[in-house]
Each structure stands twice: as structure tokens, then as C-alpha cells.
Image 1: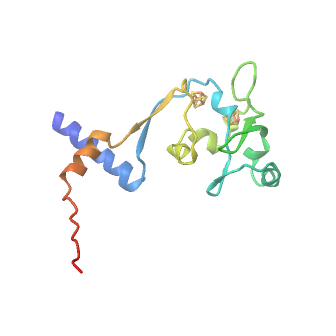
Image 2: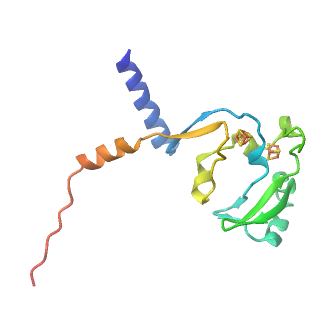
Image 3: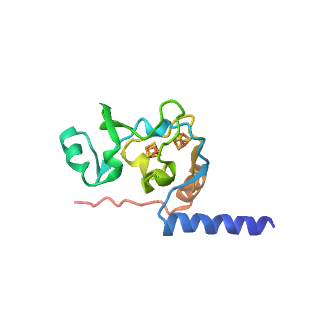
Length: 151
Ligand code: SF4
Ligand code: SF4
């Protein structure tokens, strides 16, 4: 049974890292606190939007953008709050019709531009390959040798 579990774990790790090119598993579930709906960065292409005029032009391109209000800016970019969040109940007013981006949240890509998970978020990310496994691989690798060229 243990061997089967180990093989399954390896297969899962292979699928996530090689096929999906992920480095983390997402575990847990949403407790519907609504916190991620009131501090949102918008990534367009490879960049987080930090210019309100540019964002206003994008609003016509996607329904999700149109539901956002800019509430500030920090070193990462503009910060938005979603207008569909009910401030009293903390629930999404369009939950059944919410965009795919909301259904898929959170994804590990979040980390690639400096985003972080809220401390109370019901989801957590677990590394697929642990630090110990990475270190074990590195220590088994052939040491690199450098040759000094004599003049
Ligand atoms: S549409 Fe709903 S789930 Fe998506 S950000 Fe707005 S409040 Fe949150
Ligand atoms: S912060 Fe996490 S737990 Fe709270 S609503 Fe967003 S995804 Fe759900």
C-alpha cells in the first residue's frame, strides 16, 4: 500500500511539474471571507497595471475590468476593489455568473508579480518538490569542474 501511495505521489508530481508546469499544489477551500475581492492587482500581458488612464481604456475590453474601482496604488501597481462584493454580507453579488478569473482564483501565477495570499485565506500552496528534495538532487549532481588555462 505504501509503495502504491509513493508511486501515485511521484506520478502526481510528474504531471504537475512536467505537464502543467506548476511548482505548487493548491490545497484547502474558500471560506468566502471576500478579502481577495477588495485588494486586486490587474495584470495585463506581463505587467501589473500602474496607470489609471491605461486601465480606463482596458475597461471596454473585459467585463471583469468594468466591475473594478481603483482604491489606491503601491509599489506593485494600482489596487482595485470589486464593485460586486456586498460590503455587508461579504458575499459576491454575482457569484453564479462570476468570471472565470474569479472561479480559478487563487493560482500560483499570483506570486510571479509580487502578489501574496491573505493570511486568513482558506487556500494554501504547498511546494510539489520540497526544499529537502531539491537539496538532495543538488547534492547528488556531478560537481562542476573549472580548468585554469595556462598562458
Ligand atoms: S466578481 Fe465576485 S468573486 Fe469576482 S472579484 Fe468581484 S466580488 Fe469577488
Ligand atoms: S481570500 Fe481566500 S478564502 Fe477569502 S474569499 Fe478569497 S479565495 Fe476565498
